[in-house]
Image 1 (tube, one colour):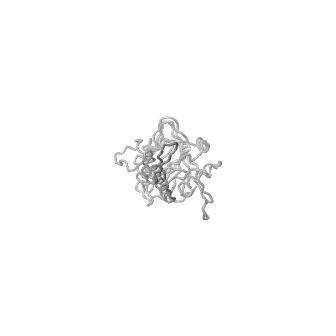
Image 2 (cartoon, rainbow, N blue to C red):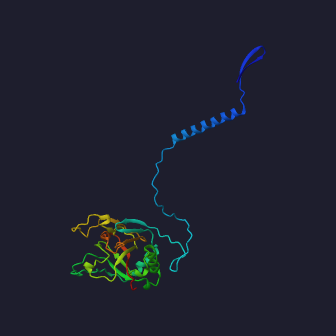
Image 3 (cartoon, rainbow, N blue to C red):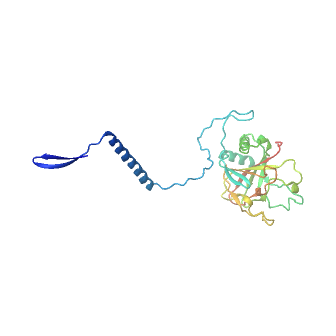
Length: 295
C-alpha cells in the first residue's frame, strides 16, 4: 500500500492507493465467500423451527402405485390384488374392510333373501331348548350358497372373501343372510363350538366374515365385549352392548378369527349384535371352518 500526493491547480490532494498481487486478491475473495456463507446459515437457522425425527412406520401402499406381478404357481394368479383393510384389534384378531361390496351387490343379496326369511335358530347345548333360549337371537334369516345364486354375485363375494382371508372357498359354510328389525339383537356368543359344551366336532369355525348389506340409522353395532382382555368375569351380562363396537355401513366387511393359530378358542372373540334402535340391519355372514365343507 502507498500514500500518494497529487497536485491539481496548486492544491494538494491525498489519495490512498492499493496495489495487490493476484494471489492476495484470490485469498481475500475466498475469505469473504466463507464469511458470507456461514452468515447465511446462521440467519436461516433462526427462522426455521427445529424438527424432531419421528420413528419410521410401515407405509401403506398408495392408490395408483403399480407393481410387476411375479411368476406364479399353478394355483396362483397373474395379477396383483389390492383389498384395503384396517386392523381393528389384535385381541381378537379383527379387521375392517371398507367398501368390500358395491351398493348393487348388497341390494341384490337383500332381494334374494327377503322371500325366504325365517326366525333365526341357535345351536343348542346340553339342557338348552328353543323355549329356554328364546330372546338370545331374535333376527330372521336364511341360508344360500353361491351355487344356488344364478346372478353370480355370491360367487364374486365368496371369491373375494377367500382372497382376503387366504382360506379356500371350500372351507366356507353357505351365506347366512340376516335381517334385524327394531329391538332385535343377538346376545354375546362364540362362533366356535367348545367341545366341552357342544360335544365332539367334526370341524371347527375358525373365522367369520360379516358383510353389512345396509346402513343402520341407530344401533345394530357388532360388539366385542372382551376386546383386549376387558373384564371377563363370571357375572358378565351377555345382553350388554359394551366394548369395541363396529357400526354397520352398507358394503363394508368385518373379519374376525375365533381360534388362535394353535386351534384353541380365543376367549376375546366373544361378540354380539346390539339391538337396532332405528331402521333395519341386513348382514350376510360367512362362517369359515378348518375343514372342507360340502356345499
